[in-house]
Image (cartoon, rainbow over all chains, first blue to last red; front, side, top):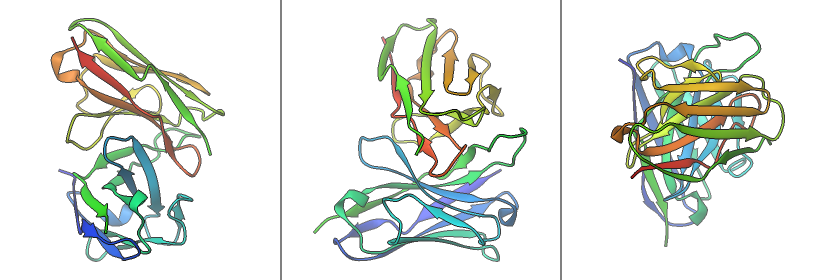
Length: 124
Length: 107
């Protein structure tokens, strides 16, 4: 079965860095685009970034552009999120999610499986 | 950026009642609209994809409809286990966006 397990969260001071990991299993990781989505405490979902199946294309939300970097290692079935210059407003649970395959013409797929999330707290 | 607006924000419902949640997009997104359920302290789970297709294993009481800018999630005959927050999500264009969520409480 599809499994996504995030790790690397914790408490970090403003301005510092943190790297999140997402270990994938139960599917051919190298065939799927992957996303990061975050959720601030008591708030809704915010899309953060996406990386294509082979790592050649990456896109970011404006709120993290220039500070966060999404990457992947298909040999290790692992997705990463390098977070630099962290701010208090980056405090959230970070989820990795798999993008499904396109099955409808002229439509783009959902995020069909999500990890359990890892909490990042930015505080002095 | 495409803005998704859900209504209502909160709904308190008796078991076996029908629940309807709407999601309106600020511009046309075709059928690239998906619905998720998130229970407290859990990650979101996909319910409906491409506006109206049920995801594997989702109970048949959940259904979706719509296209373009107006979408609806319907829960027929609500059960106690359906207490959760429901989000719509558009994948039509980047940045992908989510609705603000609709919390469904069981009376």
